[in-house]
Structure formats: C-alpha cells, structure tokens
Length: 448
Image: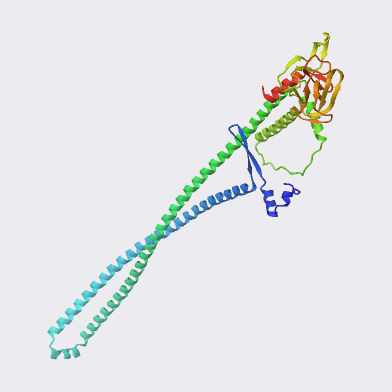
C-alpha cells in the first residue's frame, strides 16, 4: 500500500507495520472448470504463523519431554535397584544378629546352669554352723567364685551391647522397609510417566503423519496451480487464434490497428497513486515460465478484445432483410450498365431502424446527392461506416454513438429504386466488403 493512500494514513502505526510484514496475498483455485480467488489477509497469515509456531513448539516440547522422562526413569530404576540391594544386605545382617543372640543366650544359660549347680553343691555339703568358718578359711575358693561372677557380668554386658546393636539394625531395617514402600509409590508414578511418554510418542507420530499429509497436499496444490495456469494459457491461446482467424477475413492489419488503438488511448492520459504489487516468491521455474506466458497471452487477448469492441463488425439492421446488391462489380439497377458497387444493399421495410455497427463519432449527417440522406460515423484507427438512402436521420453531427444506437430509418432517398439501406465500410478511405465484417462479427459475438 502506498504511503500517500488516504486509507493508509488512517491506519495506526501498528497496522501499517503489520501490513508491511504480512501483506495480502492471493491464491487462484480452479474447481469444476471454474476459477476462484482466495485472499489471504494479514490476520490469516498471522494465524497460520501462530499455529505453525505452536505446532513446532509442541513437537519440540514433546521430544525434550521424552528425553527428560527417559533420564528420570533410568535414575529411578537405579535408586530402586540400590534400595533392593540395601534391603537384601539388611536381611543378611538381621540373620547374623539372630544367630549371635542365640549363641550368647545359649552361653549365658549354660554358665547360669553351672553357677547354680556349683552353689547348690556347696550349700548341701557344708553345715550352717560351719559355713562362716569355711568362708573365713577358704579364701581361695571365694576368689574363684568372684572371678567366675565377673566373667558372667562381662558376658552379660557384651550380650547387652550386641542386643543394642541388633535393635539399632532392626530400626534401620524398618526405615529401609518404609523407603521401599516409598519406592513402590515412586514406581507407580514412574509407570504413569511411562504411559504419558508413550502417549506423547503416539501424538508425536500422529502429528508427523499430519505434517507429511499437509506437505503432500501443498505439493498437490502447487502442481494443480501450475496445471491451472497452463490450462488458462491454452484457453487464452485458443481464443486469440479464433479472433485472429475471424479478423483475418476482413483483410485488416490487426497488429497495426492494435498499435493505433494504444496510441489513441495513450492520448487521453493515465494517472493515480503508485501501489506496488507484492507477489509471492516463485522458486519453480516451470510455474514462473507458465505464468509469464499466461500474462502475455492475456495481454494479447485483451488487446484483441478491445479492438473487436471498436470494429464495425455488427449488422446495421435488427429486422429481417434481403441482400439486393452485393459488394463489387454489378449491373447498374437504373441504366443496366456494369458498375463498381462500394457497399452492400440490404432490402428492408420502410422506416426500419438503422443501427450504428460500432462506437464512434458522427462526422456527417445530411443530404449527399445520389446517396440521399446519409450518416457517416468515424470509428477511429482509419475506419468509417456510411449509411445511405435513409428516410430520416436521428443522429446529429459530432454526436458520440455506441454499437446498436439508432441513427436513422430505412428509406429510398437519392438514386434508389426502392426501400433499402446502402451500407459501406471504409479503411483509410478505401471501401471494404461489409459482408466480410458482418460474418466476422457473427463469429465473434454469437460464436461459430
């Protein structure tokens, strides 16, 4: 959009920058022989960009999540395996502790039995009145007894220490069981994570399939667009060939007339603000070549169509008529001598309307000796038409007329033997056969 466009000036700075980076683009689609044009606005392009960014962001996130989840699963598996090994080690230690407790208990029971036996034997063999004396005299036996008692105390202390250690080991074992219980919950969570990972993998695969389908669809659209452009080019070429064949029958220099038409149109001038057309980048050389050929053919077709619209190819009468005298050499209807006839006599009822056969300007409207009442129209490019022997004239000198405008009525004025229209076509002042122009016009306007 130009900086001098009033619509551009009314837009905010944000909207102008938006249109600068996201200009409107056009897409031609052909369906069932018809061509449609789709407009991709700035908002459409931004929406497509956002969707693409979100899509690729999700793919990137899913991929990173998969890698991260694999690392977590591996770390958790290692921790679970370490915990299991620790649990097995604790179970082995507990078994050892149980064995030691059994050994110490058996030893304590054995010592206690021996002590009790020793005390029982001494009590039975010594009388009460002699026990105090024995105690005073038997210092060596008391020393042995005290030594044995100390050994029992030491073994009991050792046993208590081992029992304390065993109790601490049992507490550690209990904590290990709690830890293993926690790991069971962690393992359940990890299973959920693995399920989520599998779901993400499935979604990632599905999205990859959709992307591949969209890429294939885009490629098919590009190929269809190339075929569409080529088909339009062929259709345009067929139309050009048909028009050139029809115009060639008139004997006109078509290329020269197109140049003269462009020169006449250029004299009226052109203008308006410059609005640069931003076309999408085309990387396909085949498509670019086809599009260039299509543009050239459309330009040629447009030039021929504009030329046809200004050539006197229509018929001057819209009523039933009969050709009473053709173009060329004929026998004069008045004196019977051979003569040159520069027009076409078309017999029709009196007062039938006479129509201009092409747009132009009336350069003569009045009486002209043997022609009677005459109207001449200048169509530009050196082409003029003449309508003679009219009963009445409706066109005025200098009037601009279009194809099909009524300029008069059929009569028999001037040198005439009856009601008819004398119709001439002249190119650069030289007469041409009007029947050829009317035949070409029938092919162009009505189709073969």
